[in-house]
Structure formats: structure tokens, C-alpha cells
Length: 337
Length: 125
Image (cartoon, rainbow over all chains, first blue to last red; front, side, top):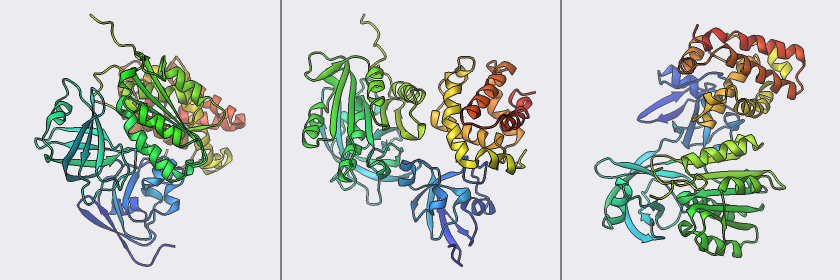
């Protein structure tokens, strides 16, 4: 029931009143705040916003993917709020100070960073943040852990020409940084509890999926969880051992390591990722799929899965852009020389 | 164009039929070698949302599309060679989608007529 009093909508640095019976979209327009819209009836999703505080009426989330509902997404045109809301455009976050607490090498080319969790920061496992250096240089990195961990865990692949990554490899512990976020919708949705999860991590794309797996297990996920850890070379599968250990502890978890060149690493399949994913996706039950890693491969897999019959609403994707100098598994690296 | 054709929209099945149609329609378009090059490098999730808005409109549902939206959204594609043959292919995929969902021929004709009304804007005429 709409209450008899106006509520407050906080949007950036503005606070707008929303009158009883009025939608968020109408309130924005009355105050001259630009927001794209088209159908104005909860269908086209042009006017989607995210509530970071406050309760979203169920009517404002009809037709949204489960992961989006979990993240507080809403349709402004059908949202008649019953209480105050703090809103932002989808995927924007706050910029907050943090500090480099720890660094360990996970492989020859991947470091694990621990950052101090800022006081006001909340996220869902599987999301990413933009890490911002003093001089403004900024790069997105996935969060590998769960909320409540002692530090925010990021896995960073060190690229020889990477301005940020090579700096992070040497930056002194205690260095002050800022982060903006969280962003991304590759999160576990409890609607998926009974379903099969297929999680495909390419390179360091496995990092957020470890967080998602822990989140799913913590919420007693009942269906099978299939984790694919993919890279060009077998030695780049830096989380294969801990994942295999996880699979031994949880009978519903299975792990597949795959590389174009296994290089003798035990338990690694040799071959192209597309084939393995097609085989797994085509299994007995309809999967919920999350794809994380280098953009060309993630986009190719998403298209392949969609065309083979998996609904887009059941595919979450986090395509890493910008760092894609490295070849993706399945896209053959150029011949040496 | 912003006037919703309520009876058509309801006959087709309303918002639920838009949801059912969007995957089928988009899959047909992406699999159609006559037109799929126009979708290379496009973010699939954003594109699916646009398809949904388009289907809502041509099903006679509530929308606030303007010819200007259609014109500006497709101008760069016209520059890349988008022409009547591609427009016809999309309308064909639209009809096939509806047929697959069991929509009566007469209603498919009405939907095709609404789609047809966007031709000049889509092709920058």
C-alpha cells in the first residue's frame, strides 16, 4: 500500500521527494532528473535503476533476472516506493578509500592482493571493483572473496606492459588506494538453489567464481556445481588444486581444468574450451551459467550458449576488457617466432 | 506511434508473450547470415533489452518510441549498408517467431504492419 506521506529518493548528491502513488520515474521527471525510458509499463527495462538502500516493491522487479533482483535493480516506471530509497544508475558505485594490506604470489603471473575493506562498502561475491591509484589510473578487478572476509581479495594477472598490474606487483604494503564499485551481476541468486550451476572462469576469471561457489555453498546450494578453470597453458591454472580440494569436500561440486597446452599438469584436459562448455551445457538439466574472463572468449561462449538454446536470462557474463593483450584459451596463440 | 493497440497486445498474450518471444526472435536474427553481421560486437544483454522494447511496440503494447529514436539508433548501420533486404529479413524473422509461438496469421499480419511503419525511419529516408 502506498503510504500517505512522501518518501525521499537519494540519487547522487540530490534528495528528491516522491509523492504517494507517484512512480520513481515520475518523481525524477518532476524534478528534471534525466532518465531514459520507453514503455513506461515495466516491460522494456530502459529505466532500470539500482537501490543500494531501502526496500524495492515486488511490482518494480517483475521480469528481472534473479541476480538483478538480488542486487536491488528496479524499474523506475513501476516503482512506487513505500519507504526511502538510495538509488544509483546500474553498476555505478561509491568511491571509497582503501589500503594495500597483503600480497602473495599464486603463480608465476598472478598475485593475490588483500585490501582493507572500507567501512561503508558492501558487495556480493562475484562482483568487481575499479581500483584507482593516486594519479587516477584505474583498472577493474574481480573480488575473489565473500563479504565478511578479513580483507577484500583480488587476483591480479601481472602483464609485462600493464601499467597498473606491474605497479601493483611492487607497490609497498600500506599504499593508499581508492576503489569504486561494486559493479557486475555475476552473482549467485538463491532462486537458483535447486538448479545446476555451470561456472566458467577463463584465466583470472576464475577468481570471482570461487567467491560465487563459496556463496552458493554457504547458502546450501542443492544442485550440482560444475566449475571450469580454463587457460592457454596448464601451468596457468593457478587455482586447480584448491578447487579440486573443494570438490572432494562437497559431493555436488565438480571441477574441470582445461588448457590448449596442458604441459603435463595432472588432471588437466587438453582441448578447446567451447567444446567442453557445449558438452556440459547440453547435459541432462537446464543450467544457470556464469562466464568470467577475457572479453572475446566470454562473448563467444555467451553467443554459442544462447544459440544452442540457453536463455539469456540464465547466462551471466563478466567480460574483462582492456587487459586483453593475452591470448584466450580456444583462440590459438600466434606461432612463436 | 505511442498509441498502444491494447486489443492486439492482449490477443497476443501481453507482456508474457514479449518475454517468450525475445529469446526466440533474437536467436533467429543472430543465426540469419543475411543480417547477423550487423550484430557483431554488440553487447548481447543491452541488445536483448532493445529487442524487448521493439517487440513490445510491434505487438501493440505500451511504448513511447518515436521515429527519431529508430532513426538515430540505425543511422550508423545504414552507413554500413543496411537496406530494404535486411529490413525484410527482420520482419520475416519476426513473423516466424510469432508463428512458432502459435500466434494466428491474422495477428501476425497486424504486427508486421506495425513493424512496416518503422521502415522509413530505420532506413534513414
